[in-house]
Amino acid sequence: MADIKFGTDGWRGIIAWDFTFENVYLLAQAMADYINGNAPVLENGKMPKIFVGYDRRFMSDRFAADIAAIFRSNKIDVILSDRPISTPVASCLSINKCWMAIVVTASHNPAHFNGIKIKVAGRSAPARMTKDIEALIGQNSVLKLYGQKAEEKDLTDLYFKYISAHVNTKKLKNFKGKVVVDYMHGAVAGYVEKFLPTRQVIALHDTHTPDFGNVQPEPVEKNLAELKKTVVEKKAALGIAFDGDGDRVGLVDEKGTYLTPCVIAAVLCDYFIKRKKLTGNIVQTVSMGFLLKRIARAYQMRFEEVSVGFKHVAERMNLDDVAFGVEESGGFAWKGGTSDRDGLLVALAFLAVMVDTGKKASQLCADIASEYGASVYLRKDFALSKPLDKAAFTEKLRKKMPKKIGTHKVAELNTQDGLKVILDNDDWVLIRPSGTEPVLRIYAESASKKETLALLDLGAKAAGVNLK
Image (tube, rainbow, N blue to C red; front, side):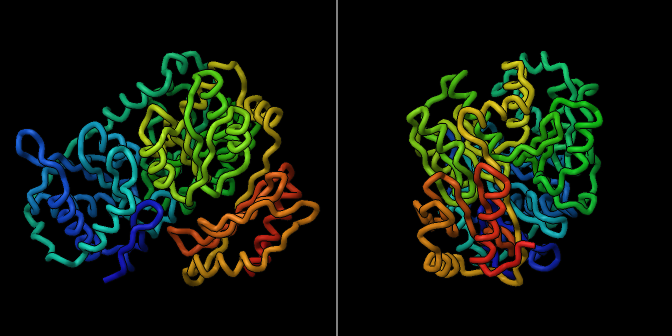
């Protein structure tokens, strides 16, 4: 049996190596034991429904069907999706229809991975819940699943109604341009066309291909060359890309320029504060940059950084008065919706901002640079032969960091998730091992590409890896 551990958002493993039917069955039984021991009893004396969905990955539908069958064997009232869904659908259903929603997905990971995410109360299961589930693995034998068949339904309309309630769809009717959407062969394929006329949508990679066309379904710049090219060629107003399970999004402006999550977050947050009078705290993961910090200063809002993983943002949103939350990998949320990331919601909201302001995407970003400073944000990933001890690695880096880098003093060393070195002008570099795959990530941000590359190089040398 593999060591089944939940990371920043769910458990993930390599198909047929550690993500096997045997291990999925063990985890399914542990989840069933947790549900039977912790789910509330409804007024009619019954337990609430549990939802099981799946993405487009290899055999995700089979894994999901067997999880649902094991739940049925444990006398759990379960609904099985009759089609691939995005993870935000499950998050929405965990508020509106079910007590818990489970999705078989490995999100943005390569095609040879699969995984399981758990959603409760509209967000990722908190660490205390996943720890309890981990502790139950192997405690009880897997109950017979053969002959058990769960009720299958399409519940995506409930999610689309939620989207309509949280984005001004009337404004979207006034959008006259075209958008290019790279679905990256993921589960969210066709969702944009629910809100924009098909004639305005140019869809890329919307077919069901479990190998994702040999491209990792992660909407970061290195994977979006075709999207950038198509936006320019078709004279589109915006390019949109979704990851494999649709909770993350990447955007490209009308010039074919990739918009970093830092800039997207700043455009949306600043708009919501100015136009919608949004109030509360601003929360971001430690892997994000200085623009939201500067917006918080400008509006005298409390600013907080949390560990990488949107579940940490969601926990703050659930416990505190948070106006806007964001993580660097394309996850955004704001007051009034679920405290979970949702790529479709972000994309449509950005389009609505364009319509409401009458400005192109590039103009919105230029306004942010003019008011809060230029931001050049880059990330570099390095494959590791084996996982690192994050705490020991971070402490080793901290000890050898100088007190001054170039002409700027080191203002802060943040060690909550890797080592983030922040200079006295807000420039920074973060060095951290990933929580979901054997990868070392180095992030940096400054006002120019030259300075950002220099910070990346500094981080690479400190970590002992080659930036080239």
